[in-house]
Image 1: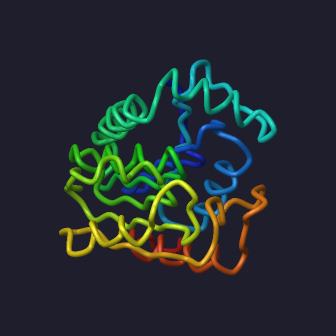
Image 2 (image 1 turned 45 degrees about the vertical axis):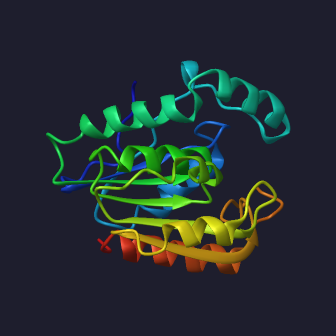
Length: 203
C-alpha cells in the first residue's frame, strides 16, 4: 500500500488519517492539510481496492463496495498493519479516523497498534464495545445519529480506562465541509479537542 507523508521534516510523530467509505477524498486531504502546522508527518493511506475515490453522489455504491471489501474489520486489520509498519521510523504513531475510518481506528486501538487515537462519529463502534483501547482514545459523536442511541453508547464507554467521549449537538459528518451537516463552529471545537488530546504541538 503506497502512501507517503504529506511532508517529511524528521518528526518523531506520525499521524495516520483513516478515510470514510469514499476513500481519500477532498475531506481527508483537507484534514491532512489542517495537520500541516503541527510537528508530525501525516499519512493518508487508502484501504480501498486500487485506491478508488467515490463521489458523494455515489454513496450507495461506495457503501456497497466498502462492505464487500475491505469492510470495517478488514480495514481495522489493515490499519493496524499499516501503523505497525511506521514503528521503526517514529516514536509515536497516532490515528485520526472518520466514520468507518473511526470505527477501524477504534478496532486498531485495541491491538496496541497506535499510541493515541481520535474517532470522529464512528457509529459502528456500538458493535465493538468489547474493545479496550491500549492507548488514550477520544471518541467524538454527533448527538443526532439515526441508527443508534448516542447516550446509550457513551454510557457504556463511561469510565473505560483511557477513553474520553465528547458529544456535539450536530448530525453525522459535522466536521466535513462537503457534508450537508457541516457545522463550522463545532468542527473547530472538535478539532481543538482532537489536537490537544493527541498532544500535537505547533511547528
